[in-house]
Length: 238
Length: 84
Image (cartoon, rainbow over all chains, first blue to last red; front, top):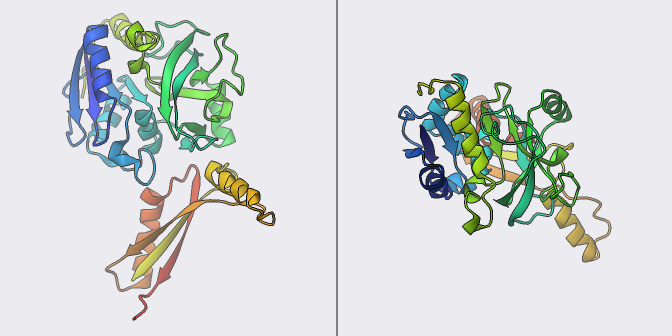
């Protein structure tokens, strides 16, 4: 199974994702440059964290026009699993593959810390091996992670079960204190209507080994391996 | 011709930066500043002669790239260059 890790100028978690997939998960990872037009037949696409194009203008605003995004969109429309982590999530929002937008954190500070992330849905390819209500300990590292969407969009996300991850305390309670950035409804991650495109602000790829403080993030990668294996056939790729 | 694009957060969207600036002004004694909304200002230098073309282009660029319509709105102004 091959994971394409898309590299934009300014991506800085691309190697973390590569390492987690190759060394911890034991699957194949391949870097794909943002100017490429093909994902090289990958089974899974990862849009990694970082500061694509320096986050100039807005986070993800320029990256969404990169040539590779045409292939990522086609891959997603064909049902291929796409995971946007942090800046990758912001790119998915900017290009409209996921709804909403990111505001500056409510306290206007960059947050770099471990947080609790509650899994609310296991019917996505990236949470299929997790349990509903499971609280994952993963790091966040962002200045713009304050998820916003108009009320009608939030209602739709809630009604259709598309809020996949919420910030929560160790017992799974979504308190205001457990919400690091002011995100509406404590949203840490969502999925698209097809449920194959998932974006989240916390970094699962930086929480795959106990040596770095937590191995809780590994379940996202194990999930997609399980989902694709359950499907019997590996996605053809684009 | 120059086009000026003003991008601001929609009124319904909380502005953490503007809020922080307003609080700072209050602590400096500027109590009559009730609120602050922070935005972005772009000046586009256009090689277009027609005002209609300039406005159309600036509007397209603002809508497609400079502003995120989910959270921001924008306003376009045209300005002929002033000879020094």
